[in-house]
Structure formats: C-alpha cells, structure tokens
Image 1 (cartoon, rainbow, N blue to C red):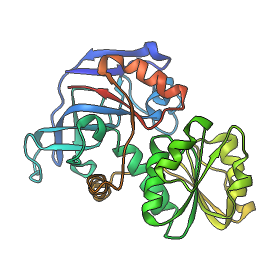
Image 2: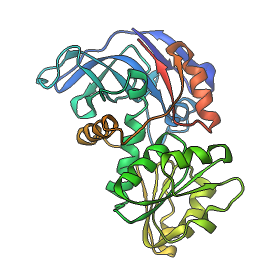
Image 3: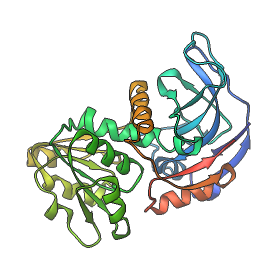
Image 4: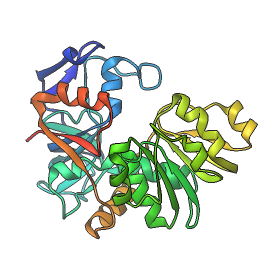
Length: 305
C-alpha cells in the first residue's frame, strides 16, 4: 500500500510516498481502508522533529491521525463492525491507504457527511470536547476564551461551548472575525489590533491553542479558580499559582462515546465542520506546508482512496 512517511526529521522534502506492507489487525483492532485523512498541526511538528520529547516515534513513521473510511477486516474479538461499514476516528499513520486502529478509537461515520468532511472532525472535535468539559469543567452560563477560534480545534470548541450554553470570546485575525460570528462567538477579538485580555475578563476557561506569549497573557483573563487548558505547551504552574487558577496540558485521549456523540451533533445540524482544501495524498508535503503557515480556516484534508 501507499503511505506518506518520514525517514528523518526536516522540512517538506523529507516526506516520501512509500510502498509498504499492508498491516493486519490484532485482537480488538480493525483494518480500515482510508478514504480521507485530516491534516493537523501536530503532523508538521512531528515531521520537523519538534515532538521528539513529548511524542517519541520510531523512524520511519507514517504521519496522520484523523481518518474516514470503511472497515476492511476485523481482528479477533471484534463483532461490532463488519466489512464495508463507514467509520471515522483516530489512529497513528492515517496518511496511508490502510490503517489499523483499536475499536475504542473509531465510530460510525456521520451519515450527513462525505469522507473528506468526516476526516476533518475526530482530532479537532475530540480535543475541543475534552479541553472544555473533561478538563476545563465548562458549564452552562460559564465564560470561555478560545484562542485560534477559526482553526480546527477552535471552531469546534466555539460550537460545543455555545451548545452547552456558555458565553464565548474568540480570537482570530481580522479576516476571520465574520466567520467567528457565523460560528456563534459572542465577542470576536482581532488579536492583531486588540489585546484580548482587555476584552475577555473573569472567564472560567481559557483554551490555549497558541502557547508562548499568548499563553502567558491568558492568565490575566481568568477569574480566580478558573482553568487554562493548553493543547500546545505545558503551562507554568508558578504563574497559575500566582493568579490563583489551574493550568493543564491536554493530549487528546481515545473516547468512542465522544466520537458517537459528536457524530450525532453533526447529523442533527448542531455541529458543522469547515474544510479549506482537499488535496491528493501525493501532495501531503504541500498540505503540511499550508498547515504550518497558519491561518487555515477549519481543516486541510488529504484524499486517499
């Protein structure tokens, strides 16, 4: 099968379209024929070697985490799926024609979406859900500041927070402010012209998708006892203690119940996804370059089969 792999760390030139053996599912696993794979910032960060400490991998490695496709084969003990079932979910190595994953990491594909749209959802929506609710504890009537609210995780976080009944502040570049309003953001903030901490005050939860100076300044937006959740960089516990808040780093975890509920919200029209571009698998290097450049509205997706 074809798979986009790296044999060494570096720039776009290290991505190779290799021919490798098709994997076989083990107990509790399925083999999925990948139809589309979502591109996430973590993909170019792995390619560049930035994730070596927090997410060590053995080279060569196939990139990609999001997928939508069909069940090709089941491993021993798997009886909840049959060959041909349309599914979506997460796995390591989805930039390939086939991928093996555990049954806890996939669910029936949303009926209302095609494979490219479905592949844009799992990592972003699941990360947003876990950051806001499992870690942040956001409830109806709460206030949340979402950084990068036009991006993949951010756009899902906005919609999930609004569905929960929260008040949402969202940051983005000026060209995306109207898009934030469409998503449901109550107070869109142009981070290029406005200090977000001057607008968003006493919030219950900050979802940090940026790190660095943005993360540092975000502590001032939280109320006492609030929570900063970062998906990019472990936050300073000293700074959290100084402001009387909690600060957590989140790596998305498998959760089949959340994938099922996310699909239900999608099919009910309560959760929408945005696909900025669909590129062929052979153009994975270009897709990661676009992702790395930033300012993507929603998701870039690779069409695989």
